[in-house]
Image (cartoon, rainbow, N blue to C red):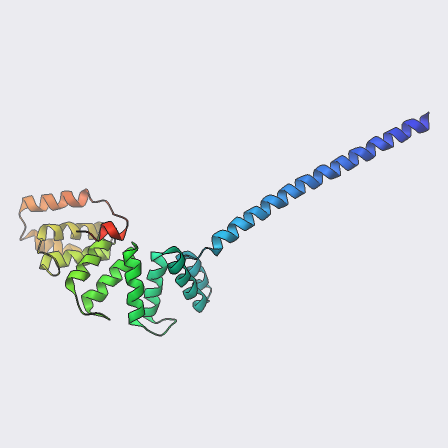
Length: 229
C-alpha cells in the first residue's frame, strides 16, 4: 500500500511539473508573440518612406540612400517635407551636384503640399530670379503662404513687400502687422527698425488695427489655404 501511495504522489508531482512546464511555455510563447508583433509594427513604421526616415539615413552618412528615401516619400506619400529636403540638397550642392532646375521642381512640390520651408525658399527663388525669371508677385505669394504658417523670416519678407508695394498692392497696415508677427516669432533685429519707420507714416488708428490683427493671428496649415490672399 505504501508503494501505491508513493507511486500516486510521484504521478501527481509529475503531472504538476508537466503543467508548470506547459504554463511556462505558454507564457514564453505569449511574450515572444507580442515582442514579434511589436518589432513588426516598428519595422513597418521605419519602412514607410518619409522626411524623417531619410533624415535618419542622412545623419548616418548614407547620402545617396537618404536622397532615394526622400524621393520615395515624395512619389509614394506626397511628402512635402521630403520634397523640401530634396530641393535643399540639389540647390545647396553639399552631397550632390547643383541642379537648380531639379531643386525648383522639388521646392514647388513641397510648397504646393504645404511645407512652409519649401514655400519660403520657393519665394526666395522667384524674388532673386535664381533658376527662374524674377517674379515679384509669385515671390510674394509664397512668402505669404509661409508667413501665414508662422515662419518669421517669411513674415518679415512679405512685410517688406507690402510696405513697398512690390508684387502686392501697397498696404502699410498689413506690413506693420507682419513686422509685429516677425518680431513675436523671433526675427526682431530688422523688423523692429521697420516698425519704427512705419510708425511715423501710419496713423494711431492704423497702428491700433494692425496690432489687433497681429494679436488675433492664428497660423494656417497647408498651402491651399495659406497661399490664398
